[in-house]
Length: 431
Image (tube, rainbow, N blue to C red; front, top):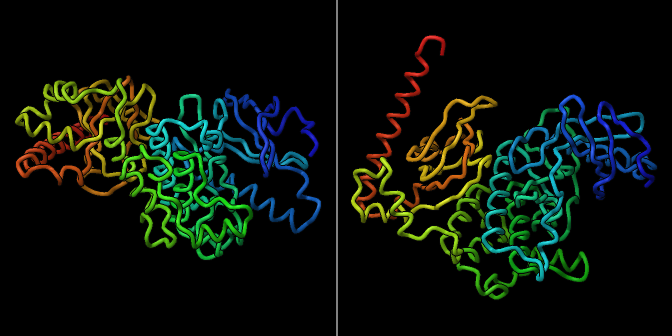
């Protein structure tokens, strides 16, 4: 593969090489019209020497641009453009600072803290759920295809062999035995029809490897790997990592079921269970104590009519989330059943590119997701550092009857007030 001898591709300036993979070489580029740095992935020239290989390769290369271009999500690498400049094929993507992947953190001597691993895989599961609902199956989830930013945020990339489940008659796709053998699902190995649950299996393999530094199905050759994936059980998580909570072992066992019917029905269901793991991981010294949480919550208007024991029940039934300024708490278009109560800080409500409201301490958001499994109608962005209580219906159902009745009464009052304010705003002249 000779180095790129062009200083520009289309309207983009080409700086220098920053990465290399099986499909192409990635360069640091600059978009003078948007005024931003970008990553430019240039197709390797070698595959074009044989016509049949060239056609398959071109299909795979531009499949990435087409599929990823459909997916606008904070945990998926954005694709901005694609083109051909003379004999050079290229894709223009979001530049991920640092440009690391999860791969270095899959060895025993370089594991990340358990809570960081769970948080990262949780976000990957949410991103995959978003893709699946758009009709996209990734088919190649592995540590090298998940980028890691300087702030330890994850972004799924490389949709070159992704499968579109919703096609028109003109669409063509790469079919057959494709993917990375170590991370294939059993049905992928057997070249059977695939569903979103194939990605769930692959993500389960990534989770196991990041927790233990060992691959659950590793063997000396591809045939043995394939056999392990399709027929051999993995070593239970807590035999490989004795500090792992039982719930995490359950999540992995379910994700790695040999038959899709035994796995999570959706990546969102996987994410929901992963969100419960934090309650079982030993908290760090920086985490708020139970008394600190109670003192913060007791002053909120939402809990004004709650008895102290009921407040404790809601605290214990909630997941406490910390977000930093600029973090996305809820992404427009996602499906989730979480309801949030802001304990400290401020957030912005954004619909499309427009900011429509600002919420502060004591305010709530996510009501419609809590009562009906619907797509989020707006994004919530942390304006400042915030703490928020994340409440799910399934968690509240485990509380006492008096607590449940109190919670639902206040919740419905909050929802009515929100709808009233929305209606009032919508009926104002000029709205």
